[in-house]
Length: 382
Image (tube, rainbow, N blue to C red):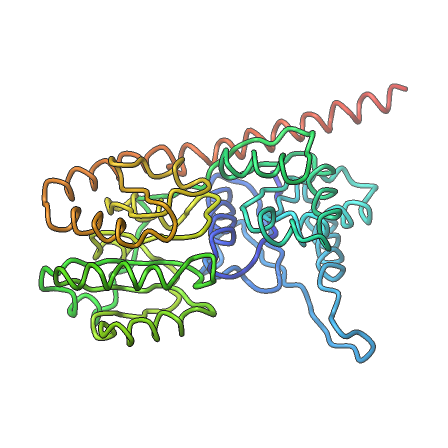
């Protein structure tokens, strides 16, 4: 199959999943064309059977804000024609789903099919804004197929937008066997003394409750020796820095910024902290579980579908940093608990192995294409 993938090129979960999906599809013999404003962050060296097409963004004096969605739709249509794409698989209803619908109109003489994957923010935050609700709903209803990464997100989409069409659940995935580089030498040396290590990975936006990460860590640190690794970047990095300085534990924290592969850092960890206000899935939790790291997180959204409470981690109410700190201390001070949960985390992550999930996308692509062929045959016989 010839598949176009459009996603955010940043280090966020939707972009990571879309990029890894494209790489796996190419490995399985499909032709994949990425269409975005830049090469996806997680892509690395361009693999065989993969092409990257960047949307050109220009400045015009008469346009206060450049119409990116229109430029994206034009680039999509261009790539569809040049590469004779069978499917455009877009990750986020807006702007990618809306742009794909316009690209399909531009290339109406071609049998292009659109699949939209919902990841969360496009439904719970951006798409639910009154300014975007009509176009978000249209992008969902008019796609040839729609998937959501969790049961929670599917239910929320149906509720928020009064959706009547089917939405299939295909979860995020991991590839635990993928080769990974070693962790940064300086980090490995600094943590090589047996001290428990907590890790937080996010885009450092308010929904991630970074202050709660620090409050939880500070409560742990007052009881036992511990270190904290903060992975990622975003507007609340300065909040985390200020809170750590205020609590007096800045010297026990490591800000490593954005990294392409988090597995090497997670392998240094004893616990992943994810006290978010909302997570539609929780890819960071799954990545931690895949390398045997228990998760202490909020009981929100799709996280209970990933983290099994009291088995692969602990789930507490958002904002209950005291309870989260107690759970962390329980894990890192009792070797039997750490071992039991780490083994269970790795086993649970197997449910989301790429070998199980990628074929679900392939089967969906094939169903959509068969359906389009039947429609074309029916139309020609009239």
